[in-house]
Length: 203
Ligand code: IMP
Image (cartoon, rainbow, N blue to C red; front, side, top):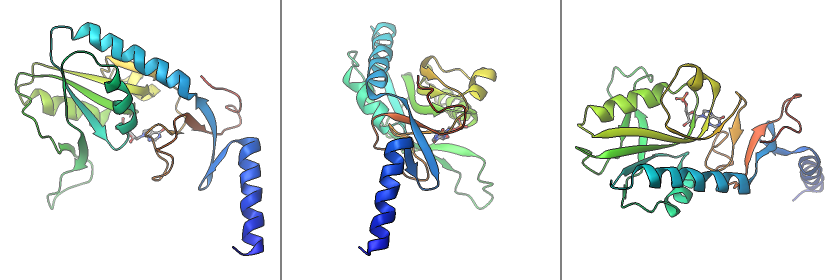
């Protein structure tokens, strides 16, 4: 590595250590620690265990964002269950506007099933609402949503999310499955973009 690149790499690392973490062009600060995330995930699983005592729910984690949350959540689920990872995609027809989203990758029949959609974060909740309606049309017995994070637009619009890990502000967050332009999904803590008002504000 050329000397100048090495120096700028070292300066970047020192800067990140002192001020937060630089991902591409954005600086992030730690927001929710791994231990708080894990405690909350366990609590959510306990609520589901209690609510679904005599049932056999089908969990539908929405990829990519919910892979880590779903994996940790399922470790604490004690009721019989099935799990199928799914994706949300634009319709592939020629007339696609890119706005209409639908569920793909569903491997199980959901007729007469108690479905739990597993989300990483609900922001506007628009896609989620459409997916819930889509699933109800398949003859499901019930459809509920669990989301690790929820932002204000979903709260304000009354988008139904039965199980919420953390209600957060509108800041952009990453880590624990959530990405910034493909980066940061593997972090076990959750970070938020650094703004003048959020320097020390963790949950
Ligand atoms: P919604 O349809 O507006 O609710 O958007 C939800 C999706 O947007 C999530 O599943 C994420 O993929 C993405 N998203 C929303 N807010 C954030 C964020 O702060 N960080 C990373 N991804 C986000």
